[in-house]
Image (cartoon, one colour):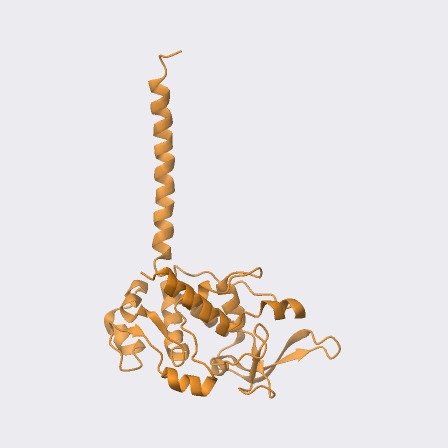
Length: 251
């Protein structure tokens, strides 16, 4: 179980790297966050999200406090994990470490990309939850020739991260109003391997997995919490009846 010091460090590092741009968004009006689909109990969604995470995120980002063996909790067998999700020389009992070494990552990006173990819990705000932020963030990349990476993002302007899912979504440009510089819509430059609806669904699965990874026991916790409330309600009723029976002959 993660101690509070580790969680604090992860939340702080992840929040900075993925865009704590609250003041900038407030000044420019910002972008409304879309509501992320809640499929935390959908094993198929979690499994697809894990596959996307390993194939597209784990190249640069780590999830150093999540072991591959924990993926059995979302219905994957050890053979499936070994054959489909161990893309490096890692063993099934290892933690999910990025393919890119921290030193190389710092040379390429100027800083080592943050650990994503609890990233879905780090960006809740007035616009929505951390899952809402990630869902909107991963769907608002666009081509920008003035950016060092060739990409920009509506939620996190001047982001240093390139659009790793561009082959799925295709290339888009953001259409801005020339006078107000407000966002007006999207212009599809080249198609992706997925339709817009398919891409949104895939990003929903990815965010769903990130949300689960931040607290794998959350579903169990919620179920136990519900049963505890039922037990306390029953106990309260029995206590009330016992108290009434005890005092019935005393006036």
